Length: 308
Image 1 (cartoon, rainbow, N blue to C red):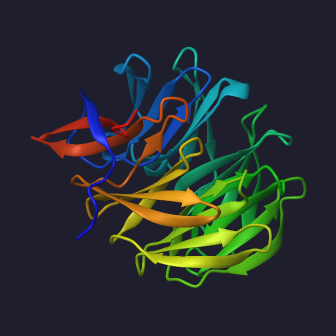
Image 2 (image 1 turned 180 degrees about the vertical axis):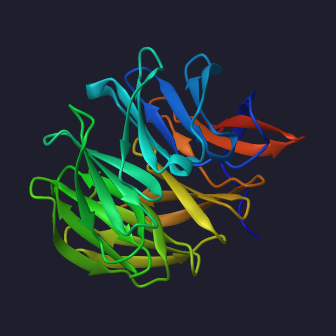
């Protein structure tokens, strides 16, 4: 029997739109705002994390998947799959100020601060789309050789890491040259989601095909542990202060792990329908779990560890 998850409900915030799928989230620590892609609600929701309330719900984002707030640019980038484009939103006015085309199915988004470039996973196109963060123009495509899963920037190696899910590998891109510099095999089926713990030089990789979690030591680029997790893992979040890893699974489970000395220990599971996207506020340790259909309506469930 799984342990009871160390989480308690703080609040449920009703959200507008259809009782349909959410996707990625991005938390901006400079403004304490949470941006949520309501994928099949065709909108971008904005939450004030400190006040615990909805401050805006922006329509006109059909099929929104990836979302990334970039405070240094005062912009929020949103993958709009039904229009095959990336929308650029001003984080002060909430107005769309640019659109970038060139991706078949734009998904996860990452930012390279030194180059001021955005890298966007094009899942169906098998490339990463590269955007100039100053001009918001497309400046290149990086062929991956397979379907793109998520993309993240590693500030220590100064590389973009991309999960190539149909090749079961993680690859590294030099953002300065926009060239692939290394490929690393992953011992699982269909790695899609992952995140990076820069301080401890770890990556946590989830695999949709066989419901595995890999712990990757980024210093030697080798898998140090393989754990079984609930079916259909999707989005991950990591609380660097509490050293807790959250894995949202579309099968209806939020798996919680504690990390210590590079090793993970299960802390239990929180069950909720369609709980496949999660975000965390590293300052308050609150966990954000959008749920598409609770009593026929969407809502944002806010949770926190009970000892807080």
